[in-house]
Image 1 (spheres, rainbow, N blue to C red):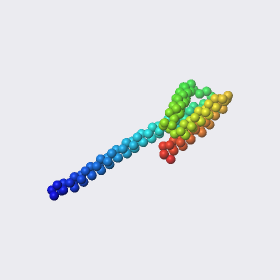
Image 2: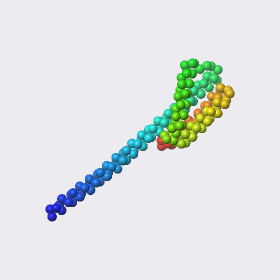
Image 3: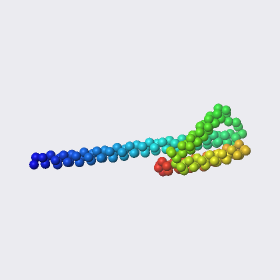
Length: 158
């Protein structure tokens, strides 16, 4: 009779211990999964922000040059150098994000970047400086809202 008095509490303790171990393992796995999902979201968000910022610099270059062209004025040398530097960095960033591609950003975003590069390439066939810049602005202005829409959808922030 004495032996049965300690068996019930021991079984209850064992069941509680098993439940605690299983629960803690599940909790840790869920926390790790959430941590990785949040880090991945941050990386995707940063990539889209870099793409949109690069598109901004492309647009700024074309828009500023077009404005000065319409005014029939020369862009100040220092301003032109800064715009060209930002343009080169922006093009490099867009190529990098396109090449990294669907590893971070969506396939749809990569397709949009490819369309942009194709349209920018077509603009080089323009003989007139203003037509060239206008063609570039049209391509960039088409791309920016599309990339924003894709980013919002991909990041689930609609």
